[in-house]
Image 1 (cartoon, helix red, strand yellow):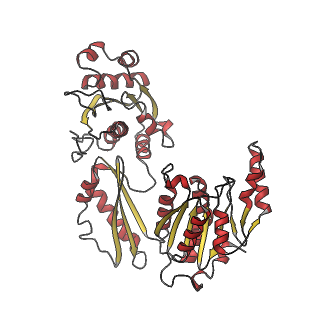
Image 2 (cartoon, one colour):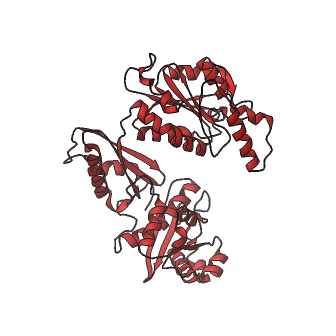
Image 3 (cartoon, helix red, strand yellow):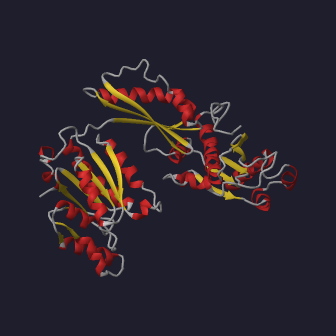
Length: 455
C-alpha cells in the first residue's frame, strides 16, 4: 500500500477537521527544552509548509519522557489534519518517539526486517560496528508506512492517530529535510489540498528593517490586486534584510502576475541596496556571479575580520573562478612584511587608518595580481578603543584597475565583536559588488544606509 493511497480518505475521516486542513509541528528532545540545541527544524518545516499553502498553526516541543510525548501527540492529533514530528528516532534509551506514537495510536511496535538489514548495511558500508541497540530503530508502530532515510540510519514513518496523519522524521536537520522533500511534501500538497501561494523575495544590504518598511509603505498603490490577498513580510538576518510578498487567491494565474508586479515595485524602491531578487541567491552568490559576469578577480587584505571576508565569498559555488585569496595580516609586522605597508604609516597613523588600508589594498592587489582588492582594518572590541578610534571603528579601501578607488570609514556600535566582524566582511564585499554594478555611484554602500551608531 502506498503512502498516497493510505491518505486518500484523510479529509473524509470522522475526526478530521471539517474546515480547511491544518498542520502542526512537534519537536522532541530534552536538549531543546534546556536550550542546548536551537530548534532549526521547526523554522525550516514552517517555511516548507507555507510554500505548500499549508502553513503551520502551532509549534510544540515535548521532553524525552514517554508520557509527555504521548500526551502532546494526542492533543495535536485532535486539532490538526497533519502533524510533523521531529526527533526521538535514534538508538539510545531516551529515543522514545516510535514507542509513544504506537501508544497514542493504540497499536504495538513491530520489527521491520527490511529496515533492520538496511541499517546493518549502512554500518558495514562505513566500517562501523553494528551494536544491538541500533536495531531499536527498526521497531516501528504496527501498520506504519516507512519513510526511507538514504543518508542516515533511522527510518521515518507515518501513521494515523484518529483523523490526523502523523509524519515522524529524524531530528538531524539534513535527514529531516531530505525525507520531507522526498516523501512528505507531495503527499501533503495533493491530499490536503493546500493552495500554493506565490512568493517573491528581495534581499538588501545596507538598510535597517525599519527603513525598508518605511520605504515600502503604500507599495500596493497603483497595483491591481485582481482579487488576490497580498501580504508583505520582513526578515532580518544580520546584516541582510529580506522583504517578501506573499500572494494568495485570484484566478487564472493572477497571483503570479500580481506577485511579479509587487516584486518589481519593491526592487525599484530599494534600488541600490538590492543584491538578489529570489530566495535562493545568497550575498556571496550575487558577488561571485557579478565578478564572473565582468570577467574580474578579487583578493582581500584582512585585519580585524580575521579571514571572514574570504570565508564569505567562498560560501558560493564557483568562487574559485574569481577569488584569488585573502591575506590575514593581523599584526603590524605582517602588514609590513606581507603587504608592504610602510612602517611610517603604521607609526604615524596606526593600523586603523585610511593610509594603512589604502596601502594594504594596493599591496594585496599587487601580490595576488587581482583586478580588485579590498582591505579591512578596525577595532572589533570589546577592548582596544580610544576617543579617536572607539570600538567598532573600521576602515576599508578598494583598489582596482585604475588604482585606489574608494575609502570608507564606519563606526559600528553594535557592542558585539562578532557582529562588527560580520558586517565589516559584508561592507568589504559590497565595495566590489557596487564598483561593478554601479560604477561612479557617489556612495557605494548607499546614501540611505544608517545602521545604529554608524557614520
